Length: 143
Image 1 (spheres, rainbow, N blue to C red):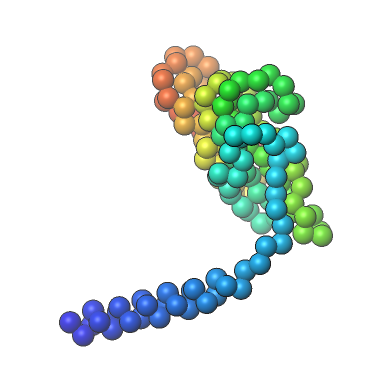
Image 2 (tube, rainbow, N blue to C red):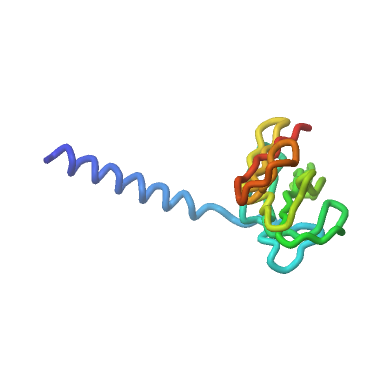
């Protein structure tokens, strides 16, 4: 019983230390998409790797060029931090076979020169065939 009580006190002590450390954060920037629009859900999913970030917007409706409207097809935005600490949008990514309601960008992960973007409601297989409702897909990008 004493061991359990001691562990509880250690856990509580770590919690309070973490709480005090968290109070040292201050906002230095706010990042938005260049083509932001109502209900895109930009920022719902984020991945950071050094001075680069990928930010999902699973309900984005327009392609990388700002046209070809498809409801909730989704997009992901790549940002890079410049030498002054400003985050700049460098690219907007969409699925090569984008479809309405695919929610591309609902999961994002960046590691080195690889980027994975989830599209949980994508219906087609890797060859663009054999549709299955909400089967999902992950798109792999390399820099």
